[in-house]
Length: 305
Image (tube, one colour):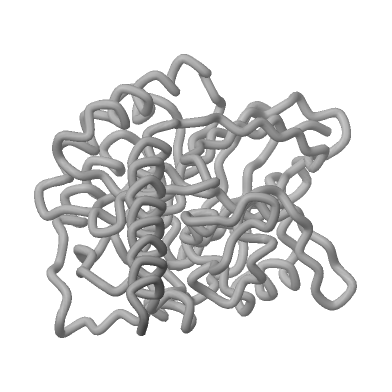
């Protein structure tokens, strides 16, 4: 290579390094630009009063994340009727106490939840490019278990309902909320339990069927849709986490099409259409703490008749 060629190559390498450094710096900043997405959906029975739902997902708490904790605490000022948490709450072995402190005002409100893999197991360092090859793989023998039992005990003591492969009906005034959820599909723990049977008089009451999953794998969405869900909540995707402006997510870390990796879309199966709300999530893995063109979010849904 000529001296001129070496200079050109060196200048190109320097430019790429500077661009990569700038991108990482921006990603570190954007991960703390917390946003609230608003949605409105007419899914309740005729004559029902509105129901406000706060959807949280993928908090991935790590000790010392003061900005995230303060923002989570501030969400209680929205005074939702219901909190829906779709998992991946932890990202560190000592994250349970900071998580519970951040959620304390929200734990005073009615809530339901399902776990994600990063409720059960601590994340591992991984090559970020490996996500382009398809959904990440979890090997239980290589994973460190998190203190998820204590987290679930605290959620339960606050009145939040665990819907991991369970269903339960809850009264909200004259409206019956029929919940059904699955344990984490990304780990293969999911087993759809159907809907609450209720009493004879309860079956006559107006009701809405609300489904929860951490990871929105198509098999799970199809099962919820076939069973008559009125709305589905999920997370897991991080909205792609690192997106291309004007294009969107490159990956969803599951078999969900990438254009559905964030936001409110309509899932269709066997002639039925159900609104699907996928949260882009609030946190990141502690080993990939950046977001680009995909700000962290909670979602406030106004459900109406």
